[in-house]
Length: 117
Image (tube, rainbow, N blue to C red):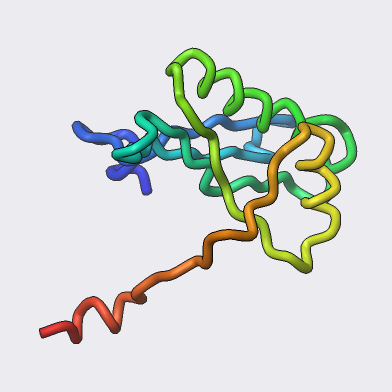
């Protein structure tokens, strides 16, 4: 993670929240590009230590990514949320987020990639 995020060619960006001399939360994002849209920010990961939830830390981290998207002139900021994660959905609705039902998530896992001929 250190090499991929802080090496010569970083693959992601990261905002962190600290308390008591330790990291208590982070927001990880990627710069993305869509041919028909332009520059996009993909909000990859979002975690706040359970002890520090409900204190506005998550909101501040999420806002950092929104403001980065604005500074970068991104056309879209996107992310995924599991349908059963009601608390996360409630959180994102506070930002007036759109919930896209037109796309399905698709992926190849490491084994599938390695076994491709």
